[in-house]
Amino acid sequence: MGLPAGDQELVQIMDAALADAARRAGKWLVCRQGCTQCCHGAFAINELDAQRLVAGMETLRGENPNLAAELQRRARIWICEHGPSFPGDRETGRIGDSDTDRAHFEDFANDAPCPALDPATGRCDVYQWRPMTCRVFGPPVRIDAGPDADSEETNALGHCELCFVGATPAEIAACEMPIPHELEETLVNEIPAQGETIVAFALLR
Image (cartoon, rainbow, N blue to C red):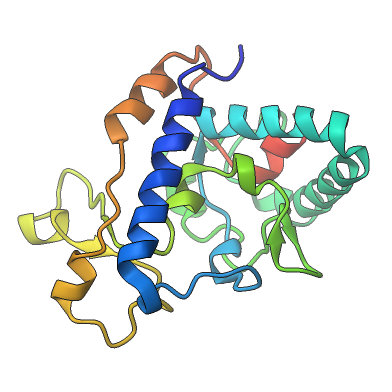
């Protein structure tokens, strides 16, 4: 099991989409290093995201072993603190599939800083290999409201609450960042292992 070759294409598409959205947004997009609101709170990542982080850690072990060790140290501390209430399997790091587990995950570690966040600089130490959720946070993106949502919810644009302050709906819509969901789904399906986990467990694989 490893990272699908097509992930490089996905990352390139996402990087280009973000750069274009940022260019169109101009002053409305205030994301910058040191602004870490989006780096707090546990969130689910798919196996593609997890494998990308694994590949990133392998690269860091060769190029910057001290940083790799520090990331793992932070991840262990994170799991030691929040693991007892993790709604899933602590051995595999998989989030549970039951309705109860999913409900509990909604309130799990909501204020905890990501172990990949350098507390001194406000920098993501795995930025190059960060999950898709991190890559789309900031610019306006279409919200996946789920199968029970009405048409208004399905077509809604979401963005970081710190960005686009004072912008009109038209100005926000003009900066929409397209997401290649189909490509991501195809790559996820190429990986035999399925399910979701969180960053802390992925950093320790």
